[in-house]
Amino acid sequence: MQLDHATIVTPDLDAARRFFVDVVGLEEGDRPPFGVAGYWLYAGGRAADRRPVIHLVAATPPGHVGRASPRIDHIALRLDDGAQWDALLARLDAAGIAYQSAVVPLSGEVQLFVALADTVVIEFVTAARHVPRASL
Image (cartoon, rainbow, N blue to C red; front, side, top):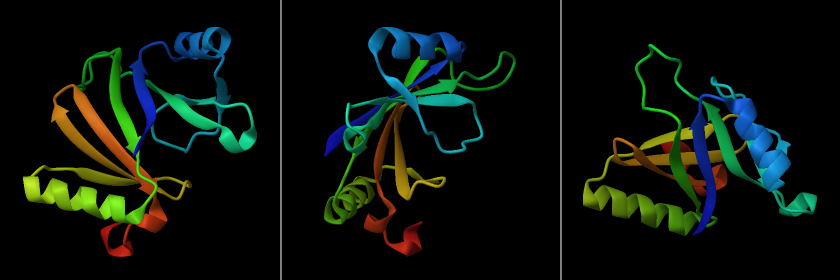
């Protein structure tokens, strides 16, 4: 298992993007067509090594129900093996821990979200090929 990315929810997407691109040196790149505005920022020099390590997401507009912002929304851990994914699901089920799953649009990846508290979410992500079709 490895750390995949951090998601930062912010009311000023453009300022956050400028900081991470202009100051930190990450590069803006492709992002699936989610229903909320945001950016995926990539690290790594060679194209094969590039990964979206920071996900920026627009904050909940004022007057709407949602979690407070700005905030670091979640951390994501990547599992690159079907057996690891199955073992994780078995441990979550055995412990009675609730989770939600989702498919990332156009990516071939599956996400699993576990809320540790109202303000802390852990995401697990893997390639869809590691997940049985019946559970998608």
